[in-house]
Image (cartoon, rainbow, N blue to C red; front, side):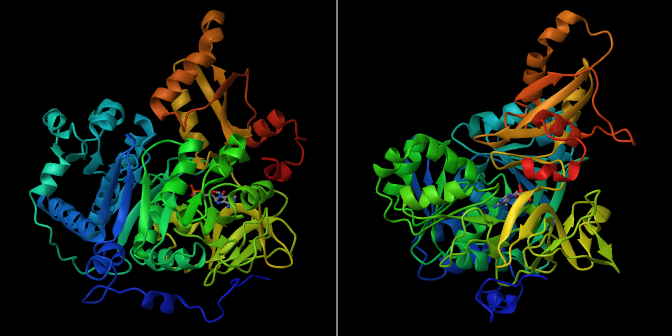
Length: 579
Ligand code: PRX
């Protein structure tokens, strides 16, 4: 049995598309739906962005101003010789220039690729190389720390558009460097979006798999249909809302729901530059009168740790909906929200490849604590049965579906508008994601008899730490670059706050003397941190004489995990539920 949408029997994606404008000559472009159509109407002077800068100052950008800035950005790209279809990368924190760059890139019909600003030079270099990045928008500080050390490995990088007060001073020293603000100011605020088909690629999001290099998921302009629809159905966005998506726009949530979805609804988006701080977050919710708040389980757990007293000291009465995504949201957190924030926290499920929310505790409907929710209208989900080896069972070319209550692989019927349309330069890898018209999510879940979905774990070895998806191989590869390491195995171990924390096991090269070996875990932590950045680097390193291997010689991470957690080694298929 498969499960249809929780609500909306009269729902259709065609009708959802009709809620949008479309380009004057036909076609669909995200930037037109998110900015230009509002700038041309009654919302022109409404704040599109409200930036809470790290220094405490607050800066609004209206829809009219955002339309002008993004048009200037598109013109700049054209002047620099950036053609439609080329990729523009951004390595930025939470600043409005990120929004300008993304939407301006869409206006040029080029492809936007955000990179997470906490990445170290290695992940940055790898992604820029895979995407053959010719243009990068970043700050002088991030450039110096993350890009300059690897710049000689990036021959394709032609233009570096620098953001911030010191950009003008630094630009002459950066090959291809210019001050973005100066360049924008020199250009006219009008730009006609070139004809754009709904199937034109708009976004490239790198995500991690178990093995090999990061995967570049490609998304098209049609995705905005799903962003707009899910913004209404799952998040209840309405005119006049102040919406705060706490995710960093370097990841898919920050782009889909921090940029595109709220702007497509004409609401005001908060951009909070600072890092997590419980008191400041409550103040932000209260002072900004946030109405809809999309956040993550790790953040909720940190608020819970800060105590209910702190929540009570703030006026959260403007809040109408709280939702979360990215990792399992425990039932206790849902109830804590209801008791201390005045609203239950609505879990939602999706992933980079789905582009938008697929399953959720939808606005206005029952919340089931501990469950991810039910499929959205227009989304068909199912659970595929797995065999003893954990492989999806397929008969006559289609997955064998599990019974209600039985754990298996979460599947989605292919064809929703924000579905990824390829992995960059990896057609075969893309094709392997689909079986008999179903997209394989790689997640393990079960469905109860009422059609609610419950998360069980990942079907592969990728790690989720504080909501960030981390590929173990990317970490292992860097550790093995250290001369003292011959082999590495990287796993996620349970962590009270972050869900999982990255732990590495290494085997040392022959001839490493005892003294060096004693200091190695520490030295390796520093080595990994410098190259990978704090989020991707392991938090713990253990030296082992040997690591377990599969028959084909690969490190058996599952067995490492089983031993680490003290689980029976025999039945590895049950492991996922323990992490
Ligand atoms: O394993 C699932 C987990 O996050 C993965 C997707 O990560 P990413 O592509 O980085 O996208 C993050 C934001 C959408 C999923 O395959 N995940 C996402 N939402 C949930 C979740 N795990 C449990 N419960 C959720 N609600």
